[in-house]
Length: 188
Image 1 (cartoon, rainbow, N blue to C red):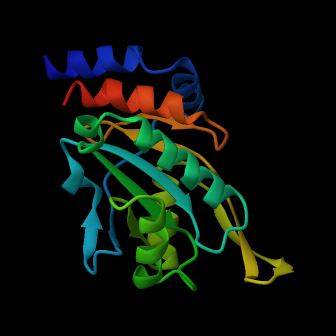
Image 2: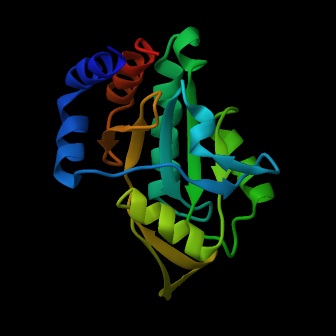
């Protein structure tokens, strides 16, 4: 019965989130990474919650802060009861500069419930591969922050079972994300 309900909920997610997911096929899965909570965190800890996940880095000059604000706005759109059922996660793809301590200040600036995750380069590559994400250190361009990290900019929406249910491009409307989060939270 639960599987049927989850499938039914998927049918009501916004068409753009579904279209992106269909294009990329099967992605996702559990992982464990060091976190801004001073302990390793596993995705499986958030079973029974909706998870919104984004790969980026704190020195990103454009995609990350813009996307984090969109996620922040989506979370503000939610009813308090729904928001309490959502766990936002930010996975840094810049392990050289983004320590768990640094991530704590960055992610909580956008929302107090955000958890920052990082790890070794090999750990991050493995998780990125699971989610079809891309990142690479770009030393060709010097900025005030040093090097840049080229990375994909999708936001991932996972249901209460940890299954990937939607993908959003970096320009997705916060209202669209909020509607989909609410749909998934109703089935928890």
